[in-house]
Length: 401
Length: 106
Image (tube, rainbow over all chains, first blue to last red; front, side, top):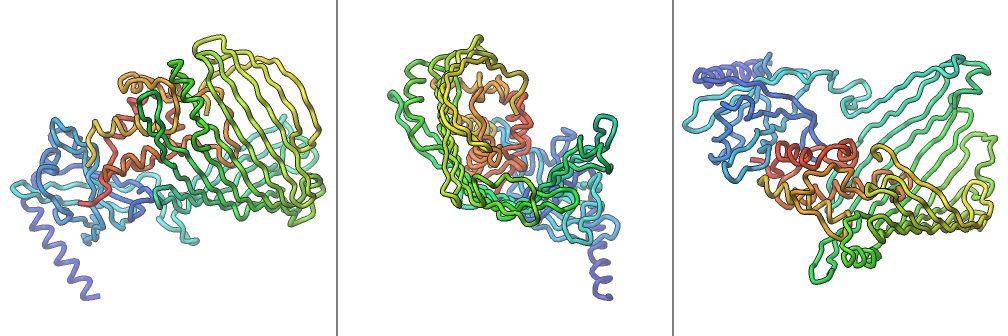
């Protein structure tokens, strides 16, 4: 206790002496850190507001280290160890300046902090960081940080008879750059359920709740493609997803389905080459993605009694695959091909569906056009076999999300 | 630390490493277009388990591009790009120039 008080007194005395030479004070902000950074919160010192900030030009010119910065909790005067300091903002080659610095330190976002910056041949500069608005206690009794928690709730009335709640909640456990790719771990739940009882809500509101955890790893495989005398650098994105435990249940938890999934999706290397050659030869400026295949194994089980018979055909273990190929033939003409394959491993059941066709657009914006498609195969859940030529009209309005 | 011209070419290059096009627009034309105007239209969406597949691929390629310059743009991911669908690439560039930061601490 005596040691702590002595340390506080020394820190306060030292910073007071340092502050005696202080000439300017500026506001700073506390921000939530990205997962790649070493601490959950950070203090950002902006140099461009106001433009007269003396650090704006000096910090990049001088060979500054993190020792130039002193961080302390304003109300107690305690010095907080700084983990790292990073320059913020791209450099303008004409006039090498940066927008600010970000200080990574183990701070409580509900507290107020003071940062002192001391550069050679410059008066001391002080920053005051106010508590992060809208942030509650850093941890709760479950010991997780509530600021990494996302919740959307939408109460609604249905036909004037019943009330329900639609919700979407997620918690990002982590996202990390590993081996040149991005790894994300997430826990999430969403669904809707009735807040009122009785037959009115049974007819108007679903009681469907989903919850689970999943991990995704994304990686872009690079490739070089020669194209009429030029060489283009492309990537073929690849994603792996593991969802070891997903539950679908009703409001009273009397029906619970358990699902475990292992999925992979990716662009198929070099299968875009014919489309690229064609587009380059025709000087088309129509963007397109490379052909991609998505395949996944899912195990579905009824943890509790389920009266529905959704598993009757495919059984508990299923393997679904989708292949999509798309090729612009002209500014107003596209070709596409899709193939879906459904396998019920338990019952040795398998079906597929093929669709190929074209779209002829009526305008340069490609917002509407006519489609001609040939389809053959079966689709879930009934898997009835159909085969036909189809002529249709397609239109898209607004932004595609 | 990455420079502003390097941020400009990194975003453009990363985008066209994922999205294919016969004739690529110039840098100047690209930055005058909205995100939506540069993306493929009417192509089938990936399955719901991979609903951000192409967005994440573009964001990852951009971030890898920044990292090649020992820099990093916080909070850049697929959903963030998708939120800015109706904005011009110039606005994304301005944001990136202001917020990109050094991956290596001082």
